[in-house]
Image: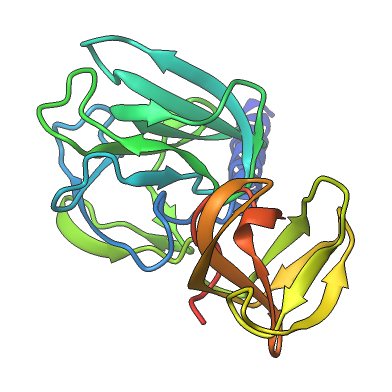
Length: 250
């Protein structure tokens, strides 16, 4: 009887773990679309299943959320350990860690979308040079990292290209001071007006391109969002959860 109970207990634990693994977020790399980074894993890393990302002249480069969630930690440990770091809670026991940051642009309790900027690459804490220390944890324990459903290489160095925000377009919300936003035939106010959108309107961003620099609700940006054939709106008036590219380039 005891053996049967033990077997059932082990089987139940395996089923629960498998269910949790299936519930893992669809993690993407913590960098904007199409950026290529060198990722290093090693047996003496702490924790061992973490990864260090770097590339040439990466100090100050944008770090983005690898999956949607709620910011649970924004902390500065000074010249030790992770230094400046951010933790995002993705629910169901899953969290992601972003360490050695030079700066952060989120606060505890803030809801973030995948691809949203959370900080910049730095060399704080126990770092010997600029890079991003990244982890995926389940119930507090570091797990083997996966991006887009594929595991990273253990142990050694590999190049990885981000697909964060690349596929399937992105969603956005028009934000103005109340007036309607003109929709243009191209990425500049020199193009004709082909429509308008009310403040708060939801849009599907098919792709993004650069054009005339516009100062709007979200500051100044030269990014324009294509929301249909021959229909463009400035990113400076569009909430996407990021101040960078979140959709494929047009």
